[in-house]
Length: 281
Image 1 (cartoon, one colour):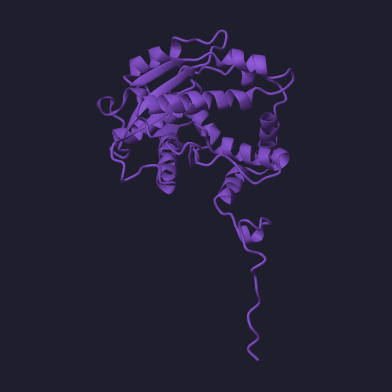
Image 2 (cartoon, helix red, strand yellow; image 1 turned 135 degrees about the vertical axis):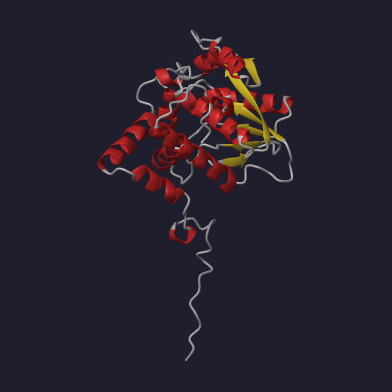
């Protein structure tokens, strides 16, 4: 790993020199490289692409930004990075924290103010969750910003546990087998959406961001609601993991090992076309 003060990006300044942290850092970098390569996020036909890296101020997005810069620093990620924070107008949001941090780190960035908070509070009935509408509004602005900045991809900080939780939410509440893919094309067909932390555990993000003392900003919108479906699913997964350590990773591997012929969707497998071998006698 990069250890000398002269050989690191400012995002890693003050990193612990412990063996434990070095192993953590190496594991996260390896997991992100695997996701980028496995899902083809770097297009050889699109040299020097530009990515809009979405920074919320949470542990996951800080980890995402740092690791992408680690890979770029090492010459392993031939893309330009533009960090972006969308200030959604939440009361009490510390609007100066992220700009000051990004300036201090020397990270190119854009801070965008759009009061989606008021829209969400006005449109969502009492007792309903804010996440769906909040996410749609935020995503629309991020796509617009990406186009304005000449970016080919919007890059989000969803990690392995987010993907697992979404799978079980769809299973329990949506009646479908689906989750958040590591790579997709938006509906307009002009932008990619990437999730390079797809193979990274949430706990690793938390330990990484804490070790580097990044200024974490909590979400006071969806984070303020109790009894969310995602929280319930997270509690179930936590219980399984506690009783059987490693269960999350096993379930995640299952998402990478689908067998359409052993499911029940005739759109994915031609069950009607199955035929027996002809009798040889």
